[in-house]
Amino acid sequence: MELSVVVPVYKEEHSIAGFLRRVVPVVEAAATGDFEIIFCLDPSPDRTQEVILDERSRDTRVKLITFSRRVGQPMATLAGMQYSAGRAVVVMDVDMQDPPELITEMVARLREGFDVVLAQRKSRQGEPLLRRVIARAAYWLMRRIAEVDIPENTGDFRLMSRRVVDEINRLKECHGFLRGLVSLVGFRQTTIVFERPARSSGESKYPVTGSLKIGINGLLCFSTAALRLSSIMGFATAGGALFLAALYLGLKFVGYPIIWGNPTMVILIAFLGGVQLITIGILGEYISRIYDEVRMRPKFIVDRATGFSAGDAAS
Image 1 (spheres, one colour):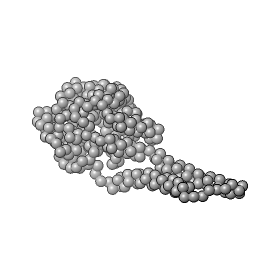
Image 2 (tube, one colour):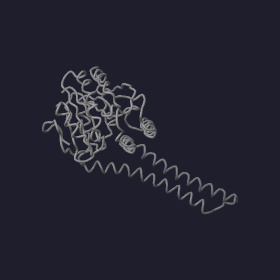
Image 3 (tube, helix red, strand yellow):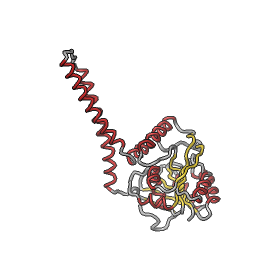
Image 4 (cartoon, helix red, strand yellow):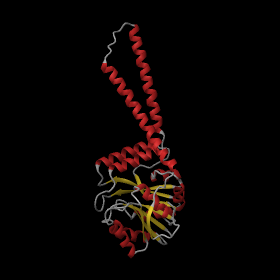
């Protein structure tokens, strides 16, 4: 198998046919051998599954993974990577904001010796202002505190060689932040820049809160900066309290009248309580992720895998 295309989907019944009409000719031209297109379906209330199966009846290179419950886009993507058989794997969205024509250039870069080819957005057309602001802030922060290098404005649209995919599949982390995992694995990586168009049809099924959750996972799973920040806040607060105590003591010795009152106490207590709650919250976020990891629950459970032979993947 030359190339696998992994496509996570949810409530996209109106996008499947147009996606395949545009993608299949590009992949046929780019791949020198056989290929597969793997749709990874979070259980949808619409006819997405029926549409995909109908397309498969006409082209057996179309395959489908359906999960027993909603697992989210990151886990759906990792599942498709585990089931993939290609010597290279492309991850992309179904909404045409990831132009399929870039696959040709990605494959060319792969043949030049690169193991990862990232698609870097030059613009983000059609996205709400809030999503753009969150994305810009998240990338800015990750570039400064993450323990791995995550290029700015690179989503999950990328091509990876088989050895990169195999190494990612070996990782046991249950928070599937693909951008961080790919950077963690390493190997030769490059980027290609493109103008990201607006969706071809419909609206995004991924809410802003979902993007925010992925961003928080990226920040916490690939950096301990938040823990260091909570320590710095604790020392700064303690230092401020000691300074204030010394100041009050000095003023008392020189006979300066000190006005005591309820506002002063309320401000100090509220400030200290806020710092403590922030610190406890940061600790809680890390502990919750530790809890998720030590339970060792499966990342996903497949309800149905259509087009695969037995033993192609283990969830």
